[in-house]
Length: 329
Image 1 (tube, helix red, strand yellow):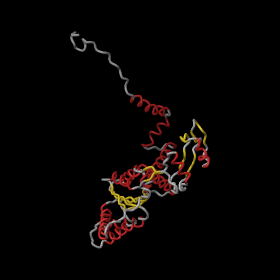
Image 2: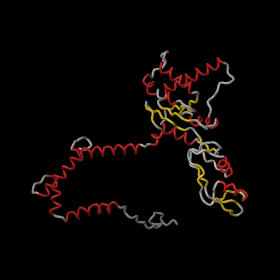
Image 3: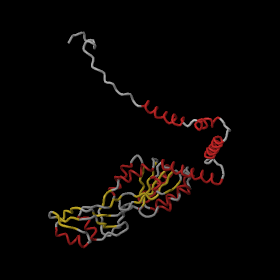
Image 4: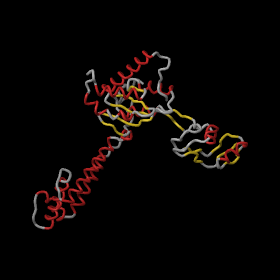
């Protein structure tokens, strides 16, 4: 999507429009704690309008000239007239200045960024492969009937695509890898995909950078779930505990394991000697009478049986007299 222009406006109107844009941009920097830097290449104006529509009430899409956005940021940082209050936010958001390169825009929001990301991803549209475009994905032409007449066989052969004639139409016998990511689309590839009605590319806003509560990070972080974070934290705790146990350096992660290991050593010592303490009595009882092991194992099974729901007993239908109709029927 190309940046908007000011053609047809007078110089005074252009200046007024620029000043209004900069003021709005600064207000959003002041107000919103979260933002997304998005790439708008290949996004048509109609598609952009649709994205603005679905984000209404949740986020504000800010598309404009990079020079204006940078100038707005500079004025926001200098704050010469003292109208901006969020001074701490200025330093945190300042890296945005260097990210305003190319055909980019800024989406401001107070909503969870993962929610805004999902809305953006849903609003991508299919697009044909035009000659000279760079393929962003792997394009495979599937095997099957192409619906093309036998006269097109030579065209498929020129691309080294294996075909056969089935019921008067050209059929591709095996899947064919046509384009790799980063490969330029040639004339033959573009014609083939158009002939088969395949639109292999999808275009929409592409998230490049994420800013949330004072920190910039990669968009991949939005895919991390709370369960993943907890698993990583637990993994780190386990590694700290293992290292601490290996070097004999107690800390909060290793102390529970050290206490448990000490108890195991005391129980083993008690089992091998006549020395005893309350926690070891049960162990000694099992060692003295191994049949208790079988009894202990049977208890959980009995509890399972008790937990089973009682069988439903169907009651016999009551007679009319038992139901109290007094022989009326």
